[in-house]
Structure formats: C-alpha cells, structure tokens
Image (cartoon, rainbow, N blue to C red; front, top):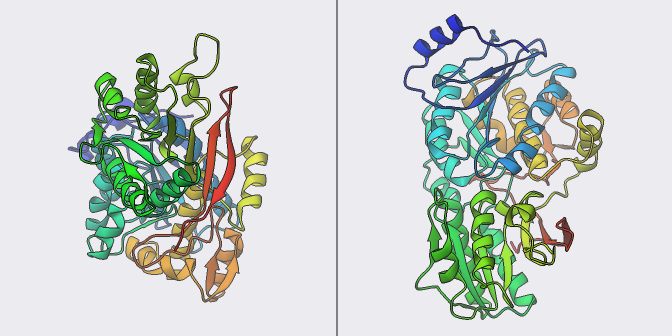
Length: 439
C-alpha cells in the first residue's frame, strides 16, 4: 500500500488547518484499490476525484470500544466493494473514506468535520458510541451530510429528532435504548431480581439507558436500590474502587452495568477483588458484548472466569439479508461477522440505495430518500444490487436488511430484536434467548 509523502502531508495540513485528530484513514479509490494513510494531526483527503457518490465511516477501531469497532468496521468497505462490482451508484463507483474515531467525542467531531468539509461526503456510517455520534451529528446536519449510526442507542437522539434538531440528517439501524432498557427490565423480573442497583458510564449512552431501565423496572414492580444516588463514572477514569463499592451496596439481587469494554472490565475486576460480587447477579448491555472482555476482567484463583454467569442484552440480527451477508463475509473474510456488522452493512446499504433513488450524490438527496427506500410501499429486496437495479429502472423498493427490516421512522429510529447472552465457564459468550421489545 502506498504511503503519503511528506510534501503531500504538508499540503494537506495546510488544507485542513484546524481539523486536529489522530486517526487512521483508509481511502478506497474509485478504481477499487485502497490507499492507507496514517493521519498526523492534520486530516487526509481522499485521493479520488470526480462526481461519484462519496461516503465515509466514523467508527472506533481504537479506544474503549475498539474490540467491537474492529468487528463492525469491515462491513462498510465490503458493502462498497459489492456495490462497485455491480455497477456502482448513479453510473459511477462509490468512494469510501474510513476514519477511526478512537471512541472519543473530540476525535469524532474532528473526523466528522474532515469528512464533511474536506472529503465532501454525502453520508457517513457512524458512530458507534452515542457520545461520539452526539458530537458528530450537529456537524453532519450543519453540512447537510446524512449520518446513519449502526450502534448509537441513546434515547436522546429520538428526543432531539422529534424537536427537529437534526433536520432529517440522522438515522440509525439499531433500536434505541428506550426499547432495550425495558427488555432488560423484563428479563430481570423474569429471573426473579426484585432489587437492582445501577452503575453506568457517564455519557448519553449510559445515562439514557439507566433512565429507560429504571422507569421500566419500577413499572414492573422492581426496586432500584440506588435510584436517588446513581453511580455514574467518568469515561476517562482508570480506577473504580469507589464506584464498585457504591454500586454493590444495599444488598441488591443484581447490578446492572452499562459500560464500554475497557472501563467496564476494570470496574468488574475491582468489584470482584473487593469481594462485592459474591451472590449478586451482574447484568450487562450491548457495550460489553465482546469476546475479549472475560479475559480482560480475569480469572479466579481456581481458574474460572470472574464474569462467568453474567447475562446481558445486545441488538440482534434477524433480517432477510442476514444469511446472504454471512455467506459473503465467510467467502471474503472467513468466519462469521461480528457484533454490529449487520447493522453497519445496512447503514451503508441505505446510503447507496437512497442516493440511487434520488439520482443525486449529495447529502440532501440521500437524506430525502432514506425513509422511502427503507419502508413500504415498494418491492421488497434484501440484495443491495437488486435494489440498485430496480431503482435504476424507476421502481420503488423496500429494503429488508441483514440486521432487520430497518423500517426507518420519522425520528430516524428502527425497531429490532435483542439477543440475550451470557458468559460460559470457559469464557466464551453465547446467545441463550431472544426478546423483541414491545411496540
């Protein structure tokens, strides 16, 4: 892969003054090749030219959510490769610019600014962390760039969309925590946990989930032990003794942790080392559904994983395109797609389908057609190339995705299905049930 020259880096620094970020950017050029450039404090521009559709991705391949981000990010270039192999969009290949947001709102804002103002993309798949999407979406809307998140679940986005804050330039292919919170509350009651404490990361994701869970759990007759003194930790924290002690105080039947992998693992390890977890069920959410986290928390003296037996929920996938997506992933990458890869595929699919429906490669054109290509009426299609073909012929479509039906509503939300997962004694994560949120 070619590397950017010092002279070009300097010229780009001049071009992108003020877009300070430390991220890795990969650009897929219109001829199907890729150039990999390591971003210094200045952002790097795409090497392609022309008027074809440009999209970006803003996902965490480093930082607190790297273990999940690295599983989902490859779905976007795979979608672009697939689309370009069947003729592209509006008669031209699609260009993709990938940015690592480092699970950091400041880096995400800089990355979104670069994608919108330097790369001039029409749409972006991102971000995963709700806090990063919060930082990015106002920039996207201001620059008329369609932002579709495959993982930001905070209910705050629904509330802001209802107020018109995003001007239609926001959607997501994952259901909001206004559904997941009640689903987990129902699971807790079903398991017999009547007294639950909460401990959450202090950002839109953690606090939004906490609010949704507390309301639903109390409605079902449960008691939130620390409702009046919620435990919320700083996303930048590195020690968690105090938070762990507070979360497990009051003799709860279970403790709900709304974490990201790196910090959540440290908190759970601290709770174990203080002897707080004995006899208390730990419940987790999608932010911790990573194969790496059991090892990060560690093992007991007898070799058993500390988090063996924890249970949690995560947005699942049950779409009509799922099997075909799995086969494609296997043929191109080997193995099975990871968490949120189907949602990432669907987010990118909606961007390209909307651009083709609009016959327009601008963010305005894409935003105007997102709901149209994802909802009835229209021919139901689960193959993105088939969808593009029908759109080119002037037909309406209703895209049925890999993650689900992705029927995007007026607030940019979708309704999905949730997997119930647990950690086995060998440290492996396994899905043990599914739950569909009540509508």
